[in-house]
Every structure is written in structure tokens, then in C-alpha cells.
Length: 398
Image (cartoon, rainbow, N blue to C red):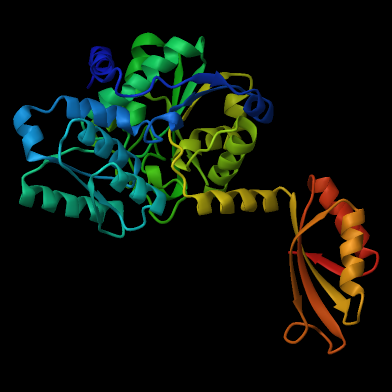
């Protein structure tokens, strides 16, 4: 296993090449969860993720001969950008294999650092197989995204900074994909804060350690908004560390990750991708474990596709009642739409979208069906608007 000395050596090696990101308290998240929450903002790194810590350390350790051969890696995005950036800084030729489902924003940003991007495979496993074959064919050095002591030590520098800046902590909660970040941080925690409770988090579709601390079970795979930790098999070396130093692993549903992204944006004013919000999702899903405790949460990355972020925010608004979608049966005569619009406006609602259907769904030729989406202040206000409309029309919530 890696040691604290390995992490400290990595910190010295990459100093000046990565940002020392801020550690800040979040009063909004603390109020929303009942815990005392501190955030470590690695979404502010140059590539928008903690992943460049490990990549910078690994590439800095290459021999001149290895640099001449060039490097290759496989990643769903953040490790890819880290390798691409630091390979460019060191003038090393880099090839990045990415699964075809990788968000467009991550593909574009990776290519922008000068690496050759190859999109291959409908899963991370298929992309990895292609990368291994390409590595053999071209004779490159493979930079593993997590199952590598140099990468693990680099990721552990996250915790060195955190523990220097955060003050006393009861818990550290971090995401687990391949396990590089949590294993590196767990080693630092065991050495510097032996009393701290280290907790890992996985999403349901990729919960390879959901039986932890027993044997791994085979996860189902599938789509997840936390694609940064969509890894079916945790790394062998990170797993050894995690079994020694992590107290428990929690599993969160997709909806909790979406809610955490929204709360991070609205409350903490931080843009977080799905994997970066899973620690907060765990606090939202298991509040009884965290009440009254001082908890460090890593915002591990902010590389979320703009469309996905927008849709996530809208879905959360719908779920908590601030967006109200109504279907109404209305008489098909002049002035009805104006009356409905006036009623909504006088109730303080804001109309976002209207769909008016006469021909196919209306129960009568003299009637129409109206679907309207309304922005409300809060769930109570949404019910008030619906109540006002129900005085005159047949209304049902969608």
C-alpha cells in the first residue's frame, strides 16, 4: 500500500503544476442537511477536476525513454483531461481513449489540450480493452486512471490540503469509482487524523462494494449521471487500501445525485458534475448518519454538460414543486386562454410553456386540452395557483 510519505513526495513533485484549491464552509448546505459541512473545491482545477493531481504525479515520474514513447490512457473524461494537460506541459505525445457515451463537453476539452482522442466502446470495459490493444500496438506507456500507486499518491494530495485547511473533522465522505481518490485520501486520514470516519459513496448502477466490508458483488451497470464513477470493477490496489482504512460504503440512487447537483448549485453556488455531487447525495440519502457532525465533502469535478445540468435543475424544480405542470379541460371558445393567463398572473405564477390541443385529446369537439407549465415560488405557492384555477376549470397535475 502507498504511505503518507508517498503522498507527501507527490505533493512536492506536483507543487506549482496544480492549484491548491480552497476549503470552505457551506452554511447553506449545513442548514439544508443538519450537518456542519466543509467543501473542498477541486472543481476549480485547471481541468475542472481532482484527476490532474494523479496524472501530474504519474507523468512527472516517467523516465526520458518513457516520455519519448508517449502515453495512452482510458477515461470517461476527467482523468483524460488531466493526462492531456500535463502531457502537453511536459511535451509528451498522448492518446486518450474515451467511451462513446462520454459527455461532449469532456471530449472537446480533452482534445483542446492537444491529445489525440479516440472514441471507442459502449462501456468503460470496452474502451479499456481498446486502449490496451492500442497501447501494445504503438508501444506507449499506459497511465491507469486509478489502479496505480503513483496516481493514488497524487490523488491523496487532495487530503493533505484539506486536513491542513479544514480544522477538526468528524467525517470525510468521498466518491468511489475506481478508488484512486478515496484510497489516497484514506491513507492520509489514517496517518494524520486516525479518529476520522472515512466513508465511500457509490451509485446504485455501479455499486461494486455495496456489500462492503464483505465480498464485492457484480453491479448492474447502466446509465448514470455520475459517469465519472461509472466503473464496474474497483482497482485492485485501491481496494486493498479501502478495505483497511474505509469504515463503510454507502449507495445512493440517481435521484439523490440529481438533487445534490441542484442543491450544490443553488445552495453552495458551485457547479458540480454527478460524480462530484455523490458525497452530498449520501448526506441527503442517509441524514441520520451525519446529523450534527462536521463533515468534509469533496467537490471532485465540475465538468458537467450544459444540457445535462439544465435538465437536472428543471427535473429537481419539478420534483420539489417549484415548477408546476398542469393539464386542463377547457371550453373551446374565445377568451379562455386570456382568462387562464390572468388567473395565473394574479396568483403570482409565471407561465413557462403552453400547449393547446383541440383535435386529438379533447373529450368533445367543443372542448380543448391545455397543458401549461408554471413557475412558482415554492410548493405551497404551487398549490395556491392550482387551487385558483380549479375554481373554474378541471385541472390535474402531471
